[in-house]
Amino acid sequence: MIRPVVFKRVQAIAVENSPALLTGVGVIGTVSTAVLTVRASFRAARIIHKESLDRVPAESATVGNDFVGLPDLPKGDKVKLVWTEFIPPVGVGGVTIASIIFANRISSGRAAAMAAAYGLSEKTFSDYKEKVEEKLGVSKEQAIRDEIAQDRVKALPPSGQTIIIGGGEVLCFDVLTSRYFMGNMEKIKKAENEINSEILTCDGASLSRFYDEIGLPPTPHSDTIGWDIDNRCEVEVSAVMAEDERPCLSIDFKSWPKPDYGKVWLNGS
Image (cartoon, rainbow, N blue to C red; front, top):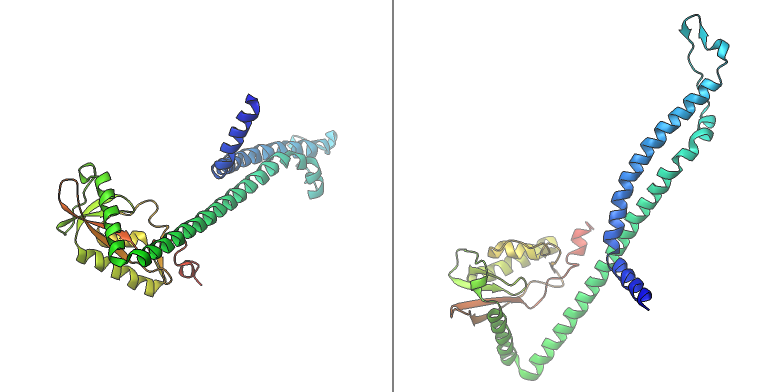
């Protein structure tokens, strides 16, 4: 009973990490192909040289003390002599190419699946929010959102964060990345306008561009998500109190940045 369970766990780990494993095989295969090709070339050169020597009659190999050059073998004969030497590098090269292709396909498939799941969750959240506004009214929905923002700020007090000093006077909290910075409503709204202006010009703008505008450094993932013509940047700001009783602006987005933003512009079409 233990062996099947262990096998299933190993299989699950292998499937989950298949892109990384295939990429590793591709890297190793590239190096191995180069090494095997060099070795095969040296062996092939020795085989061809030996065959050339065998085809020269002993009595005509030298004239006096001068060595007579070896005959140049036909290409067909050379191929027949050495083709088996190149089977290993060709085989490893084929596996390497296949590994790289499959790793790319798996990664692309997973990225597409994540984008679809992201879009579904965004649609579900949007429908839920609209229904809350419909049932409770806009003012009560805003009050609920402010309470949620307050809970988030309390859960992550600024004393444990690196506060980025800017030109503003109010403590601000970015919900998406849980980071604090100094700013004001004017800077936030200006950033929103700049992003939407860039969307009109370039058909898309990344989350990193928004962070540039408000004075926050980009994150490893902020370049991969953003807004486009069909999903423009809409900032939601809630006024809350930080743990140390300082006023704080909690920044969220009514329209979430999406992974597939600006497809037309990015594809150059």
